Amino acid sequence: MDSIAPASEMPLQVSLQLTDVYLIAEKVGEQFEQLIKQFGSIHMGVVIPTVINSLEHLERFVEENQRLEIGNRKLMLQVDSLAQEKEERIKLSDKVDVSECVAI
Image (cartoon, rainbow, N blue to C red; front, side, top):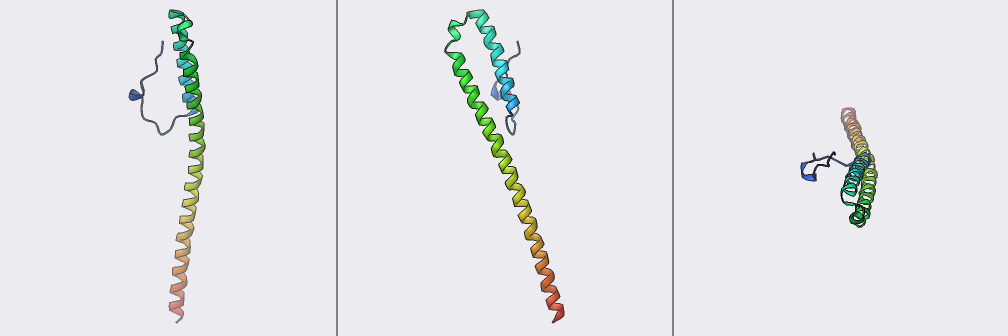
């Protein structure tokens, strides 16, 4: 049976993907099946809904994080574009100032 590594042993990722959440859910499901076979389902009745609820929350947090990352990337592109536009205006302004000095 494949086990899920403790969080302290997992490599630090920039962000968790939905596929990661689904993989975790699959592994947890497999482990629950093993526990049910070994101990019966009576003892798992309280734990399983709590874990499922936690995984659903994790899924929603990952979806929200992905949405925010997309928004962040868009904003960073806008910042880069504005910075480039500012540089171009400064260069143009410098050219205008130099040409006015030459004309005088």
